[in-house]
Length: 380
Image (cartoon, rainbow, N blue to C red; front, top):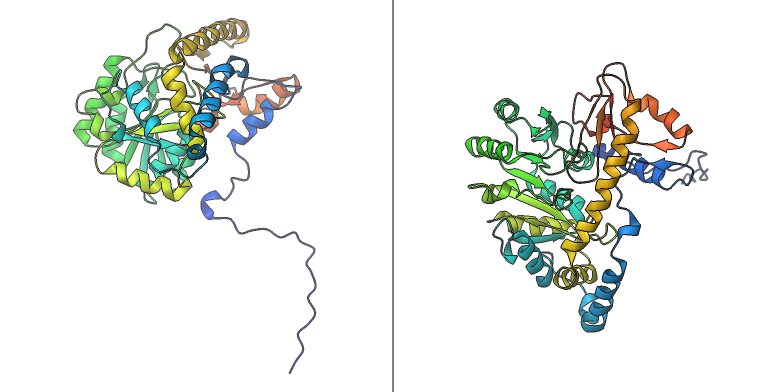
């Protein structure tokens, strides 16, 4: 019997094999955003991170204390994949202001980001096409892409996605679904007016393509006016999955959001949610439910929106004198973002190094494009 050679450890560090869908994703724009935001020597305009000084800390603490005192044992136990009844009822009540909703139509998620993964897990097959605005929320592109989908950007203007371009993209690419952020869009801050929403709804109904409507910013209006979701338009509620989140309204640290849908897809969404995370935190769900029941969320959002409106004005005033001729900057009526397109000859990614060296950061806009990126753009 031949003795085996003694084991000699390699000098190379061990590396786990990585799935092809994550190859090249050792870093990401979102990861880099939070790294920049944490640097004390940089004033960061890169992240869509709520100002912690505006959190309703007292109300949130009161709600956590109440839940732990009155529902503590249940709050610390496993829950159901669909979400706790109290939260689903409160979410349905809030949505019903603009879209009749029953608690049975709500599925709770750990923020909108998990909602995107649940939707992708439930609906997408490798090779499916998803149509998105150009530009769109970069984490949505990541969520759909890692499930094997192919993202196709659709032309937009200052009123959002262009209906004629959407219809042509549907005819050409036969998408599995369309993903839109109609109100105070990330990254541009644009909002679709009612007529544009109606035109988009008509295209989707005529072509029988489902809509994933993301609405994390809709309540953050600078004028007091809000827009009903596309899902509320005639014929759209059954063909739309509507995503909402408490991250921008209450706290991003409390990872709670929800999806509204109708029909058999609700069961599929619940199964996909269970496969991903079993359930969202019960103590957080019950606390958010208590907050929605007892706190003045509308008053809180109005105060936050007033501060963000002042900051939008300050930002617009500060950058106006230094913008190159022909640059275009959005003037959002709500949300958290301005979008600047500097024009031909400018590369916002190349410029970023000098900006950080000077102590200021922004997010280059190329990362928000599913295809054909405009490298002269930036999000502030």
